[in-house]
Length: 444
Ligand code: NDP
Ligand code: 2IT
Image (cartoon, rainbow, N blue to C red; front, side):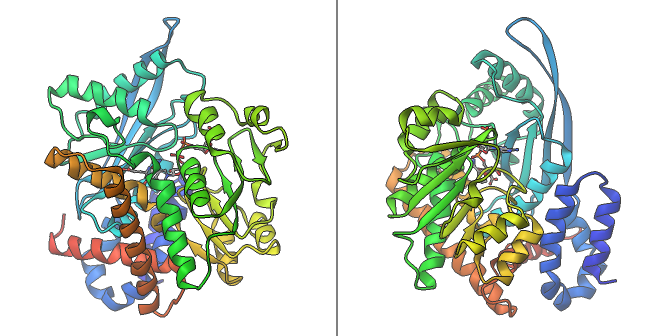
């Protein structure tokens, strides 16, 4: 058995019931075969891949909190500090009832390579809880966040581990967590990113993941002599990533016709009204059904379905494994030319393979959505130097990072004979830097 397959087999055996983690490890390690072939003896001797797939530290803790009626609830909190070879652990906190250790491990593992691809000094980590923020009052959210941070604070710090937002964690949650950290530590530091603007947040962080997704998609298309302007786009999701992907796509002259949440989806053939979407999701925290009140000509359907709408470009921006083989077949039959992942691992393995076979340009999450964490690293820089950069400064750096990132993964794919395969390119380019750092730091 090849070294890579030996390690995959061990991961599956030693981490039972964690299918998302197995999926992420398989996808990365299999595409590293050409690099492993060059360094196999040393990598085996140093157990490099075994160390890569084992988190440096994983924390699981109790989070008790009291609701508005005086009832006590108990959730489980997680932080997986996966790899600090190139910088302090960095990655978001997911608050969603589906959260478990395997999901946090898959996200933390992906984050190692994503963060490496940004070119900035950040290691990989991820955390969260099975707490469900839906339907909770602000006071209940605060009670949860304070309890969660009371334990998490013992393990993080501006030079150790810097959490941020993800599904269910936005500016409100980061604000409550920051307040509790400061109170516990008596220190005002950049220990979290995605903070509010008055207390160290970076301009353009809110927009960064969605905007970055469009910057890299535009650069990839430009390099294939395709203009993004005038294209029809299907987006899934209606959260932070989806909203700012839609906004930037429209600014660049494309038409986005769909969005979705966990109850249903919208098809607006005149183009999604992004101001209305922000009002529903960012202000009212309501369901997508409300969209029809503002746009009566649009269509709302329960369940899933955005990938049935004909489009040139598909941008999955909701959650993992939301775009299946049948969806990929329908998209290809409808003439899709490019898919770029705003969410983490939204495309299943067989759907990804199908896109490659059919010659669809495919940008994987660790490259396509790296703009969010890259801008988080820019927030860390501003906090360290106690300065505040303008929106245009941060946005220009974000754009440069995404353009550079595209060429980096394109070059890495070509170097190993996988021209145009950005999955292989991203995994190899992300890994090589981490491997070099791990080798230089000895067996740790
Ligand atoms: P939000 O919580 O802001 O939005 C998530 C959206 O996806 C909502 O519309 C939500 O619907 C929908 N959704 C979430 N889970 C499910 C599910 N299980 N089934 C169906 N729909 C679902 O999260 P973000 O926009 O921040 O995150 C979206 C994706 O992007 C995630 O994969 C995240 O890891 C990734 N990401 C986020 C970054 C960031 O900076 N925020 C950076 C890089 C990646 P509903 O509200 O009904 O639950
Ligand atoms: O998946 C991700 O990259 C994020 N949720 C953002 C992490 C961050 O630290 O900004």
